[in-house]
Image (cartoon, rainbow, N blue to C red; front, side, top):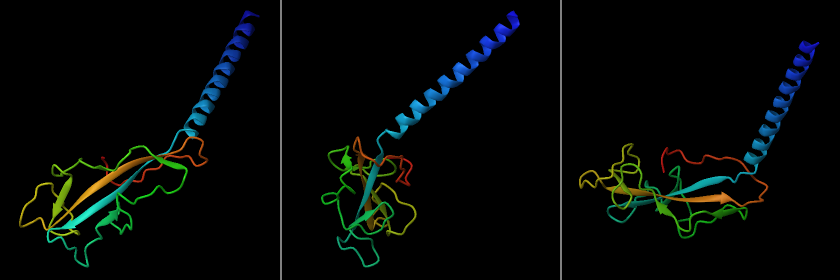
Length: 154
């Protein structure tokens, strides 16, 4: 008889543990679904040494994919009212091989290897990456985790 009570007690303990774990998992899931979404917005500032960009060059400002952006760091707007800026201003990305002002150099904009040291015969164009963090406002209906950046470090 004691064996039956012990078995029943163990079964009750296991059921209790499983219910508690399920409840903890649900609480964790709800906490994650209410967590704010953060995204980095990225713009590139593009310049040519002659101060005049060629027709084949990107526009003075481009997006993270080097596609034309009609906006610059002064006119860029949030995608909709559910977002707010985390940073007050745009920041120059100083990671990677860049100079003291965040510029990286190349012979042309389509060159695969950019470098942070100006070299007169190999540095006809330059670009720098600007980043700004935004988050979805608390209480917004749109939540999730988004990775919008192809570059591994910021």
